[in-house]
Length: 209
Image (cartoon, rainbow, N blue to C red):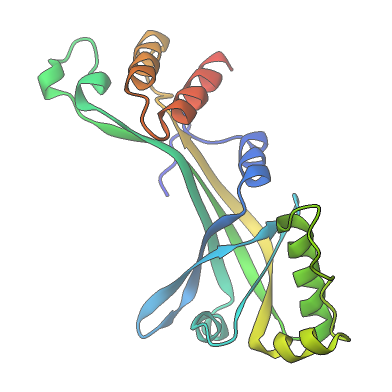
């Protein structure tokens, strides 16, 4: 991912993204049938250096991980299309402007550890359920000692991702003069598309900082 200095997210920014987001795409370095495996999945980030998740045993990801344990967990959000005329610099004919995209992207570079021990898998499930289930959930804590859970645990494998690096980008016009960014913010407010408000908020926050 290309990250210009003005687009690079701070640690506080990307940690904030991961505090709100828990769904992304797991991308393998190992190939299956000549291609990387890309798995959409929920995950649980511990706020430091570990990500927990589980996947079905028939998933092709296991074959890819057997070939190479390196993976990328990728998230993208708060994106907006910036129209050509909006993005044109003051000395450029708006009819010849070049459009762009605003977005947030976080990529965790990880080494994957496959978890097959029943107790460890149950522990991963327990942590995920604590995070995802509502406070009034009646779902019992998963346990390898529970008969029902013991029958189902063989159908999944756990993953513990050890974060070894982070690529994080917040592309919201950081290379443009403040006056131009404010104009684009006004355009986003007027258009009010599905993620325009979020993109505008990032633009203005980064402008203030």
